Length: 145
Image 1 (cartoon, helix red, strand yellow):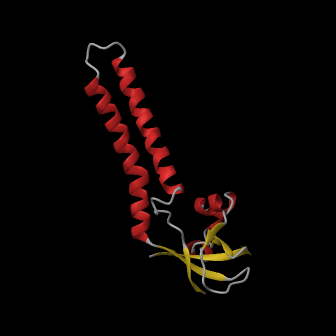
Image 2 (cartoon, rainbow, N blue to C red; image 1 turned 90 degrees about the horizontal axis):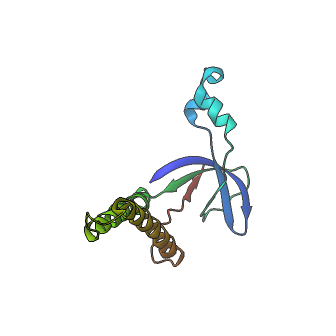
Image 3 (cartoon, rainbow, N blue to C red; image 1 turned 120 degrees about the vertical axis):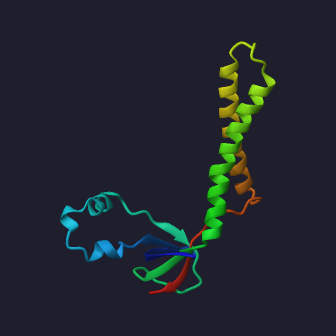
């Protein structure tokens, strides 16, 4: 499990929303004024993330949020590797079907590669919305700190 310290920012409709806490290395560092990581972190807005929780919490509580690393790895493989395989397969299939003497063969190969890439992304999205693929890696609250 990958764990991160977070703060509960709101609770609505049985849903807990958290924001990631500041890294411990940045909290006590004496070089905050000259640190680029601190400058970037202060400029970027913090994003609230919904998490599942079986623990009674209130706004302002510090919690440990975790996500299953094997589920995260499978999801990243699905979302990165499958479209890449579709891209090369579409290009290879178009190259194999078209003879070298076909006019605009390179354009057809590139077009079929892009089309197969976009089709794979659409199919992954449809499979996830129909809950055929359950690779949505949702974080959970492990404990209250």
